[in-house]
Length: 132
Image (cartoon, rainbow, N blue to C red; front, side):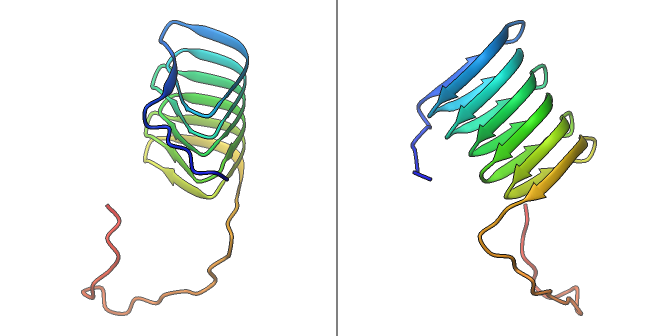
């Protein structure tokens, strides 16, 4: 997959707006209204707290605060915030689900290589990987 610079461009479906159809783009896409159909982008898809998607989403990463019901294919990170609701079929490389989020989906993770090694922590005072 090519590395696109999408920082300067973003498409937005505003609150109290609705769209039915197919959206294809290279840029990020934010949904604060109601979307029904297919979204395909090499950028990030963000669903705001008031946003909802019914359909198919294919993107590089996604951040969900609202609701999505359908098929989701995320190349990298799928992040579901505490107000998020996900239903359907999900394929992603990485998943973050905050406390309070609802995740009722059939999911599978993809990756280049599986790391089957297990790190045993015997002394919890040792330096550990910082996660936040």
